[in-house]
Image (cartoon, rainbow, N blue to C red; front, top):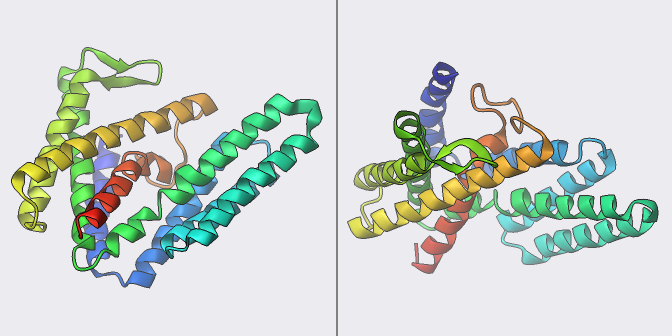
Length: 266
């Protein structure tokens, strides 16, 4: 498994690097929309495997939210969220014989539309920041990949104290600390190579925050998979599972990076 993961990463990381730097805005946006669609499919396949209408409706509404975020059209994504809630209540009232189950599915539907449909397109917003967007995107990916790598190897070498065994039995406190160290190293590397506009202290603080958010996102998706009885969200990436399995640690850092960079003027 480790060999497969490393082989996939060896191909994916350079390809991703080139794509982020050189792809045209429409091509990049189209790619992210495709990723969002796959992630929505994976989420609803896990969350509502026996309810096809809700799965299809949730995926469509999630894509509408994504389109609204990507085009900076609050009316579009706001309407999609509103329709999600209203349609969920219509379904709730239509299934009066199973109110607990219908309410449960309503919550899962709203969560999926927002978790995937709202968060993933922030990747587009981050890259489109004038002049430095692609640098911020690579900086965030460097910090998160460093966090994942540091956490993996520190956990294997030194992990003894469980971090949250009921959610992710393999996660340890030592691994979490190693993840923060790895995030700082990854962020500093990207900073030296590509993003020299940040101060060293700022880079370290941002890396720590991104590592914490990455680990939080990883735990959140682990909790969802455990609740849904799924080992992986999908199979599309060899050795890594599905799209959501790779995005889980990136989503919250991407959103944080966008709003941080936007408020700093890029």
